[in-house]
Image (cartoon, rainbow, N blue to C red; front, side, top):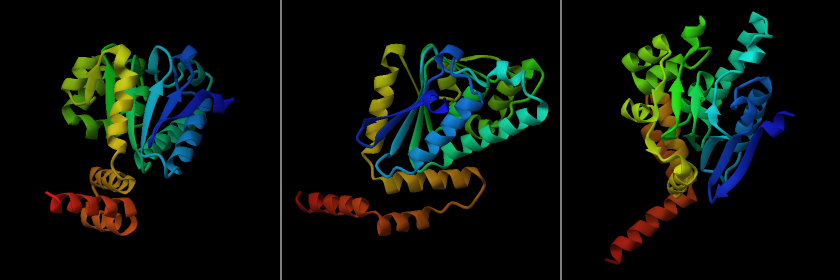
Length: 252
């Protein structure tokens, strides 16, 4: 059952699309969808031919957060165990060698908000809405608060965490939650075109840059020189591009 909840498609050279397929539940995260996403991330991360992954939600929402109807059936220990799995899932997106891009059309609430900010880049349609409503229900977000503080900054993140208020797409752009806002009919094409543009760069450079950014965000010393050297040593494509650049320069 779980495998039908996520769809992986090759969209273009170097670009794959990952779609949450629970539209009847607004793509809410339950145990089955969590398992399907875990499997999808593992499979995509192992693919050397994929440089960019674009995450979509099928239907009217990107992801409406954790499935409250399922949560109501879980005892506290089960709920905590699921939250730990989902926290590891978000970290797995961050650790993928591929650049990841969330295409948010509709609601991204709670866990859906955290899924969006677990990606490297975000594009939203004008009808996108973002919120962390957990505090209004009497509990805290189950995972991702540190990432929210990192992406949004302390003041903005605390505002959203402590009020649970809804943010429009235009406000999301203003506060740095998303990188671009487009009309709803164009979000798929725009997101994929952006991904194709990124995928033109060698995989080694993209993966190394993403890993170094993750280290710096985690408070670790940046490994820029090591990453630079490793890309030149291990990536024939990077070396070929340098040689092509020098050939063009000599031909001027």
